[in-house]
Image 1 (cartoon, rainbow, N blue to C red):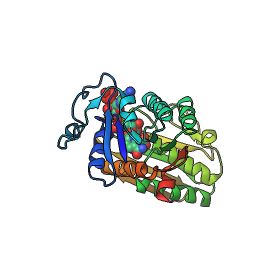
Image 2: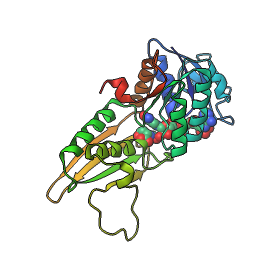
Image 3: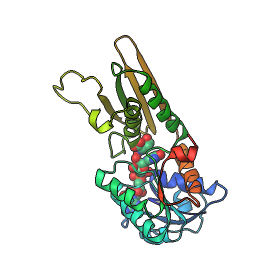
Image 4: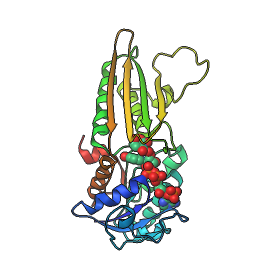
Length: 265
Ligand SMILES: NC(=O)C1=CN([C@@H]2O[C@H](COP(=O)(O)OP(=O)(O)OC[C@H]3O[C@@H](n4cnc5c(N)ncnc54)[C@H](OP(=O)(O)O)[C@@H]3O)[C@@H](O)[C@H]2O)C=CC1
Ligand SMILES: O=C(O)C1=N[C@H](C(=O)O)C[C@H](O)C1
């Protein structure tokens, strides 16, 4: 399978190039950066810390995507929408890891998924996807007197908050309670907030250092607190999930898929 990486010199882009190099059954067919990116013209293998692989990083994402069967996108929301539209026009499958898309951008991805298969997940790691199932089950077993709070910490470079994973965990908790997340979420607190309403799902965001990703879901009641927690020590876990997802997309019909489908959870 021929894979294109957009955002090739980013933290995830480099990790994905290394993951493709060590995975059987796939090869790097194209690599792109933002049109003014510093890595344009450089060898993608060298940028990722490997030997040269002959794939030059281009500022023309459409050309990189056209050379591939599937494009893997961990970039920024506006670029992700543009890449998905290009892929939909050219019949190229898409794996999206980008988080922080607004409702309009989300709708655009759903639209593209009518034309090509798209796998989109806020977190590609096996552990987080198992955690999502555990959170849904736990929320279904505990009544709303158990306050749900989701705490996440990431590296200082992260530009969206709460993390896509925290929001997805919130969605799992809301599904367990059979409510809509948007009806009960409190994405941040500041000032004279008043007492916590029953049934709210709260979020707290920490940023600092080079933390790869920590997520904890708390169920806090008067006499006890249950915590379900996950910590990533390396981005390799996301990259291996994304490449596995790309291989899984082969032969799939147009539609929007998630890691649950890939992992059979
Ligand atoms: N689903 C998952 O499992 C995971 C998701 N993520 C998400 O992935 C995204 C990227 O994270 P991360 O790798 O840390 O971020 P980085 O900032 O390190 O990488 C993003 C890359 O995208 C590039 N880019 C920006 N615009 C374009 C464009 N128009 N065309 C091509 N490339 C472009 C950036 O270039 P430049 O720097 O020049 O602007 C940069 O190299 C985030 O949304 C993050 O939340 C991260 C890890 C796991
Ligand atoms: O930006 C990151 O680094 C990460 N982003 C994703 C998110 O927003 O949940 C996944 C992971 O937590 C790392």
